[in-house]
Image (cartoon, rainbow, N blue to C red; front, side, top):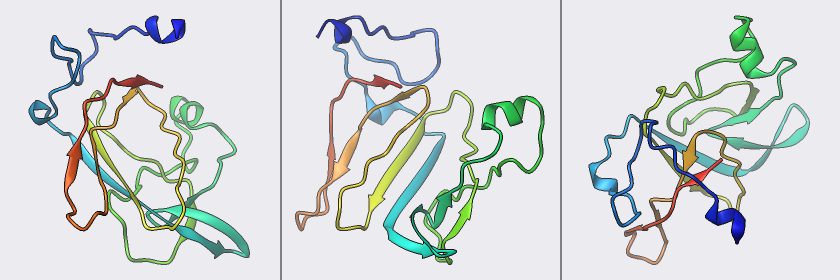
Length: 150
């Protein structure tokens, strides 16, 4: 519990700002990019069972992305991750999202599998704004959540 009390918010960085009550006003935020990440059940690619997001199964590069970017190494990764699910054959690739620096990105996690999937989000700050529960009404539930620094 003490660790949660020590979390500080960097108010000099751009992005969503908390109102005085501590929750975010989601309707007032300008969304820079929207990515729909569709998870499908594992498929066989090149003889091995692999999970995919938008038809792409991640392949670990020989050089870390940040190091490759810093030294301008070509061919280490591609900035062509699809912003929405594509109807194509699944493939193995090193494709990453080309997001706007200091932008507010909306990520929609679409799970068509029968099991729950885990995600590791790496970036500045992530928080859940809402979810759609399949209860026959297909309604969006907006939540008031504290942001989580990652």
